[in-house]
Image (cartoon, rainbow, N blue to C red; front, top):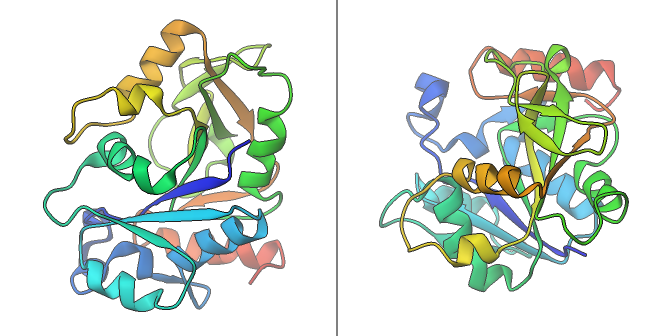
Length: 231
């Protein structure tokens, strides 16, 4: 079972416009707490033993914000590596297979996303699964302006589609990442390889989710949290 998590915190946050001029996106506050802390709350609630956070833009601010916390940092100051390359570089620090990954630009209500993934991983997917993504129906994806990402079949396998939106929480086996040459690459081609092999699965989140990728999404996230009694 996964007991290590990669938190993605290296991005430039350009969609946040002026809000990220002098700080990294993970330190933008929603309901009085940094987005990074919202993510870490979920990690600690789920009892994950090892936490790795990648850093690039204004990395010193994130290091200072988390001083004294039980976390490890994967340094990408030399170059942004995207999601796949960032995970591949962090594998020695994660020291585990499979691993959780969690984006730091969203907030959640309801079931703990990592605990929900862990339970689903133990269930119907079986030993052949290489990936398990947590999804929300397109109509329930607060703050998300794009199309859906995936369709889900009766066995829980994923294909590219529009019915569900990926929430930024997943479990992944790591060999495909370890086999890649070092450098920047997206997780998307790895997902496509898994889809082709029939080893990428999905689970639907039991609760609310808000993508906090743009300034106008902050109020949406705070409203969602308040409605759920979490703010």
